[in-house]
Image 1: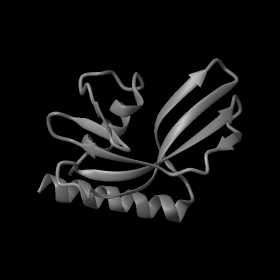
Image 2 (image 1 turned 60 degrees about the vertical axis):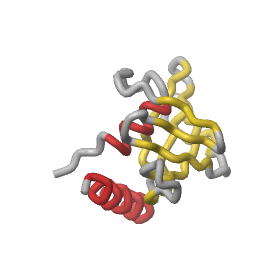
Image 3 (image 1 turned 180 degrees about the vertical axis):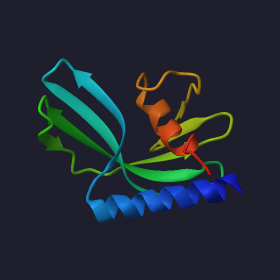
Image 4 (image 1 turned 90 degrees about the vertical axis):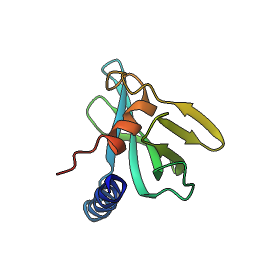
Amino acid sequence: MRRVLLTLILCSQSASMSAASELSVFHTASFGSSRSVSLSLAEGRPARNPTFDFDVVIILSEFDGGGTVLYRDAGKHQASVRCVSPAMVRINSADYAVDVSARPGADWKHDLWAALCNAPVS
C-alpha cells in the first residue's frame, strides 16, 4: 500500500514538474557565496527491478550567487532507489548504501532517498 501511495505522489510530482517547467531539487551543494550545484528529480516511475522502489532521472544544474543558471547538464542520470532496509541508491551497476540517520544536506544519496522514501503520505 505504501509503495502505491508513494508511486502516486512521485507521478503527481513528475506531472506538476512538467507543467510548471520546474525541477524538484532534492540536494544543493554550495561553494562559497558565488556558486552552487543542485541535483533535481526530472522524472520518476516505479522501479523495473523488484528489489528497488523507484527509478528516477536526475539533472545537475550550476547556479551563480544570484540564482542564475550557469550550466545545466544535458545528460539525464538514471538512478534506482530502495526505501526499505537496506536503504540503497543504485547508479549504473554500483549500489550505494544510504545512512538513513544522516542529516539532510550531508549526502546527495541520502537526500534523494529521503525525497522519495520519506515523502509525506496523508
